[in-house]
Image (tube, rainbow, N blue to C red):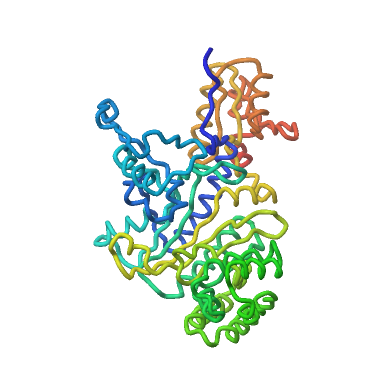
Length: 475
């Protein structure tokens, strides 16, 4: 008996309706990327392992899918010798592996796997910029919409294969890029009908300045990780965690205003200016945020809200300036639906120094879930045809096909039922496919050069000529 077919954990099949909705989101994002001057690139689904490894920290490196070398490599058993130190190691057990064993295992992995599936689009983009720098005009504005893979533990909202939708500018330190990216977020979400998203912004220099003011620059990560939990565990919980991490109690008194940080963007800028007045780095961050805020306010946003959030601390390993995160409207319980930031030396990992960049991404899967929950997908977003021409025989099918050919030239989605079977079965097919109209053609219609158009929702049926048919199906 054949085994039941299945797909790997953390991957998904998408139905025609789901694909249509996903393509609607992607096309909306893509159209606005191009409207803002971003150019498309694509990179291979897999890269050389040394391109990816060591770029995401130890946790990220563990989640990279490695590809086994092909060819006759595995048929030559003399080449596959486990290092002695790990020969007996049961890697699937709870046994801890030593540093020596990990090094040996990595060496062995390198022998049997020289390539890996891309973990994100950012590192391949950095590789692309360095490799093609002589062909690129800087500043280079690129967008990329492709799948990525992570060997993560699958759970709700977390997959092993998913799409990223990124837009980045490299080769410019101008803060006008950040202003434009805020506008881009606003434009895309407005176009999707998702009004009232909050674009949260912070700056790495502000976080560094706060840590400097309290004399805990060496504990920047501990400080920001704890501060990021303010909404979840409250002021007392955050202070307790900071003290446990070795931050002095008297230092926390200096940043007390952070625990009741509120008001308009301008109010928050004023509070930060006072708090960080003794930190040169911190004041740089304040000036950068003020520039972005003032210009966005002058230009205006359509439906989004720009908010300064000092607890925002994503990407501290690589962001050096602005940090972005987009929150869905408060009526929906959902994590961030977008994020990004400024990085000063992304291409430095491949030898091209001092190439500043800034970028944002859109969370396709989460945006889909939000639009679905709020019922914001237009009714026109469907994989189905607008009308099904019923089949009453070859003569009628030919007459129908001539109309179908002309309708398709007008970009109207229509199709002919391929078999001359009972009419009830054809109507049932249209019903299950959610096709809104049926077109019936018999001797009478052929003689009078007309068509019987039946609305499958209301049941109404009318006789129309070709122009009437076209007009009805274009509506």
